[in-house]
Length: 367
Image (cartoon, rainbow, N blue to C red; front, side):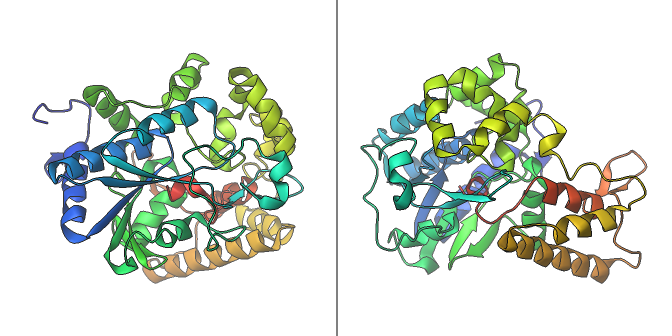
């Protein structure tokens, strides 16, 4: 592509599209086995399209892994079916029993395709799906899936995902703490070639290349949901809150099946825009953010999630103390121009805890 992208930022003398192309070509040169994690969302669509272009140049078929999360909207399912029909793609459609986070009051997790819940499944297994495998354990993490498909040894396997640092603090932290866009996970290499893209970059590049994408995005746009808030994410987690109210209007019959499977989502759709689902954002008067964060931690009922947040808080404060002489800040530090210089703080942790913004089990961070 020779024309410049007017509004796209620059990275080392290249726009972010060109930089991602260079990264993907390097990954193809370095690893004999390349797979792409595809969700049907806009970010994984961009990675898939660039990886497919590189595979075509090398006259290779591209292995694509789609983790079907059961509660997949009809438009996204139709789009994934279309992609699966492309002749130069080998689609691995997996209905694995992966654990996801859930913004519920009584429970914090649910498992898609749980055999014990088969009578209540939102959808039956789609025709292209691989049969369940013995290595797929109930409650597994999505990060385990690529290595379990037997596409090559873990040492020669690199899995590409559509993760962008701009979408959440946890994603930014993942890039900063690993020191780059490639890291080792479950024994294989895991790459984020579009980590530095912003939403405006992505949609401009989609338009310039005329890439296909799920009709779900246009329907959300017509309902007034801004492009930066449009996400295809596991239903029920923190990333899906901003769009939850749209599901009953867009897909009423499908939504009826969803709330029978996950009754908590009925309240989530009704009140996701209220303070009911934002308990960590405010704090009682007279409390410091540190006191409020520790109180939220102490009163968490889910022991697994409580342990995860405690561990992450300890790691963050330990890392802070290595590079700073001042105490861990109450609120994000600001530069002269008002931008956040150090985004992590006690306030940020309170917000993460209040929203159950929990990395483990959040599959869209992986796919």
